[in-house]
Length: 281
Image (cartoon, rainbow, N blue to C red; front, side):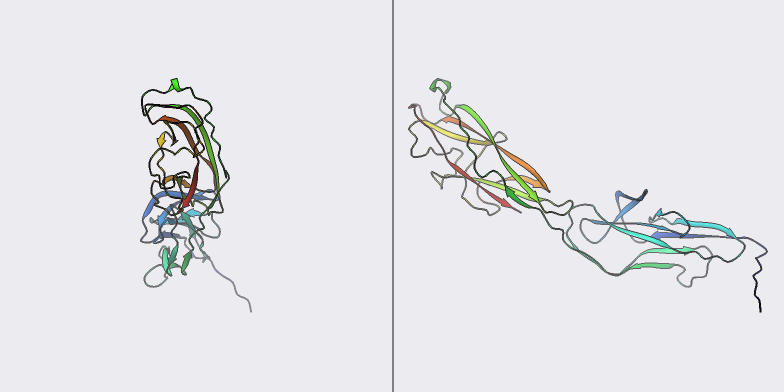
């Protein structure tokens, strides 16, 4: 027994298409393998979705809310077509973590082909869980910071409240171990070790200082620092936000200067001692 196939006496054009369903465009695109794909919002904060698909005999194409032709040809005999797809989860902001339920993400059609009601094949993904990415942990590299102001002549001071001398130092920190795009907020408090209850912007002189009528001011980026309790709690009095940092090493610049606190100045040594305490969120 032998079987043979006779070609149709006419050619028939057919086209396969795919499109996403019920998704909102983020305004961003994601590229992979030379294909630039629109990124759509998902129900997970900071996570978008992008898709590309192809017929097995054709190159990948970006999938969007508008139908995209994957393959089209005229045939005079039956053919076998298919669908090969890729889905990407794309970070579009701070990732909150969460789950996406089993859902239809796209629809695949072949023109004039009988694929039953409702007239398309649903592209369905099973539940997806996105774990909250690890945030960086931070450590202080500078354990102690000496800031000598040196000798300052009394004549350099003007009226009470005037300043003289200046010295700058940096506190170095390193944050590491965070997931891509994650950051850790860093806060800092300075505490007056001679007078821990001091909440002013003037650092007390140590008990072994001999100068009088002089105080010390410390600044961050030109702003006077007020002192607070030695506490690592976020929101501590007179604490300030240094910034938000990913995996990196950075410095916190501090400066110091003398300030005239009284009409009469007595020469001598003028030393201050403060500690810094870091807090993170």
